Image (cartoon, rainbow, N blue to C red; front, top):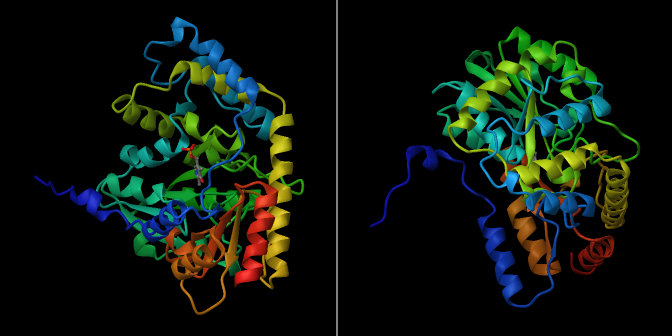
Length: 387
Ligand SMILES: *Cc1c(COP(=O)(O)O)cnc(C)c1O
């Protein structure tokens, strides 16, 4: 028997990385030496002190039972301390913070708590794909906000059609941004908060890359804007900040009714994060900044190697102030999928076609700085020889 999947699943946008995934697998099977700059997953290990905290906690039977739905108080307190240290923002660990099994989980489940069938979500285009999936699973509709180079990849709120705006309940913002590497100012957040208040919108701020920054840049949290806690929930994660993508730990925080709505959804879906992981996550957040600083220094060297290298090929590349992505305009004449396929075929280099993040990503490819500097230099050399 073969069963048809639900309408919901059928409604998901097509997965546009199929072809490039297939080509990559084939190239590897042929024994070719592929340099994969496609995936946004840190190549470096989790810091040893975090692993040590996990193994110590894992040996304690107290951590072998179901965790609390709302996360351990000690982790929520560590998150509150981190927010205060980093942004001077005060959060109540009892009601304004919810640990998550990775922030993707919370980002994708959030619409189940606040979207009714037919409601719209305002979603940036291009964007991190789970924004769309979460809305579709909740029976919602997607209203796209184009992120254009001429606007520094910030949405133009005045261009949202009023019929769409009236139906919209939530708006996703993601700065520093995946895939464009763009950043925003506190003024932008202040405007967004006022826009949300005026239009009865919830803001979902995805802050996954707030610590991966260069040239001394320090991105704000939306809660540094006045009145933000009235309208916003913000997501952060240990994944990129501490090389912990596989551990699955992040959190939502902010407006208590938003945090508690998401908590209610989750209490019906999962039973919390393995508590030994929560102990280790608190240890990471409470540590000093040395690890994160050295991580940023490493990515900055990689960024410079790739941006300068592509520059020497005649490409115009703007160095991002944050994230481990380079969002690069490709020469005219090929789609981003064709261009990525050609890069793989000719140079054995993998990059992600921009259109996979939304139609406004067409004309771009995304390089992730998730290989050692010498491999990045090698990738540039190969492109020099073959393109
Ligand atoms: C990597 C990433 C996340 C974090 O995902 P986790 O589920 O916490 O690993 C969130 N948002 C964006 C835009 C990302 O790129």
